[in-house]
Image 1 (cartoon, one colour):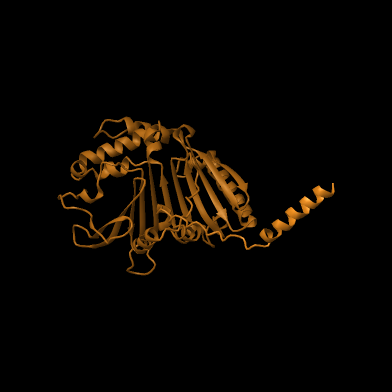
Image 2 (cartoon, rainbow, N blue to C red):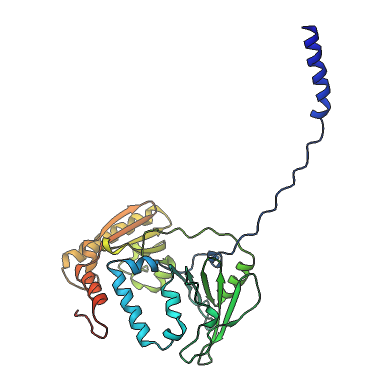
Length: 325
């Protein structure tokens, strides 16, 4: 036992200098530079944001025929489509995102961003031409991503737009102040997360609340729907797949009290439309359902059967023949 204890003590004494030694320096591994993403162009959510799941819409039973018919009409009536395949480049994309801000001051151009995700690989944006065969986009500033520019339209009016070709078959067209911001964002990516929207929706439209209230008198303080517009933060409209034959609107508010007052006003509106029995433009609200959630109100309404039937007829009608109303 004495020999074992002495051996253990000798081992601890031998290890003591190692325990007190300075730990090795660990150098951090350099983080790989972030890849530019299309959402980096948005510093904030724009006043108007539209998302269209183009691929899913083309395959939808209700809305697909209407979309295909509209594209076919455009191909036959536009001289630019056949030689340039401009329409195919956008219509064949998997998803389209449009963001817009109105002019900040008189004379300032509106800010516009158009994103096409999943565009065709066999179409070169630098070869797209207009009706007269003139190239639409010219070479732009050199940067980490390809940039093409269009300074003036065919009439000589200022355009001031850039087309950025990002990895992953993504095009970003930016105009106004968004052009400079996009150039800087793609040179120094922020790695912003993707926008979180209903993944099953065919189309989404988000409107900034204060901007919407400013443009709709009925939502203002003296309007009949003032409670709906007061403290409105955003209004988001969602179009589910055609099988649902419905539309859903979510009104987001600053607080629960504002949402509660809005719910009451919307319930009264739905009741008034249901009792009137008139087939005006608000007749679709007759079957609507109003539901209050934390700081929001959700309005769900089925699409009227005549409207759905009209969409189906419009998609199947021969070209040049207008469907009956």
